[in-house]
Image: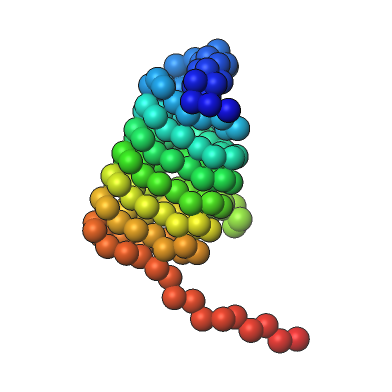
Length: 174
C-alpha cells in the first residue's frame, strides 16, 4: 500500500478511535499507523504526535489513570506492546525493533493492595531500541541512547550511551 493509502487508512482508524474513546485520545495528523489495537480505560489518556508509524502489530494499552505520550516521528517494528497504568513518555524520533515490550507496572501476585504497582517510564529523543527488548517500570532512558537487542532494561540509561545486558547461560538440571 502506498503512502496515500496508508495515510487514508490511518486517518480512518483515528476517526474510529475518536468515536470510541473521545477525549481520551489525542492524535496529530498525519499518522502512519495500521494494524494497531488500542485499549484506553475511562480515566486514562493517550497522546500521539504526528508521523508515528508501525510495521505489523502494535498494541497500546492505557489502564486506570495511565498517561501515554508518544512523540513525533517514532517508529515501531513488528510485534510491539506498550502498556501503562502510571505514565509512559516516549520522545521524538525514536526507533523500536521487533518484539518490543514497554510496561510501567508489575502485577501484585501477593494481593498486598495495589493490583498493578508501577513507576513512570521516560524515554528521551532519538533513542534506538533493538529487537527483543523489554523496558521495565521506573526506567529513564536519556536522549540518543542505544539499547542493544535482547536487553531487559531495569535501570536508568544515561544519554549518549549504549546499554546491553550480559547474561550468563542458565542451566536447569533435574
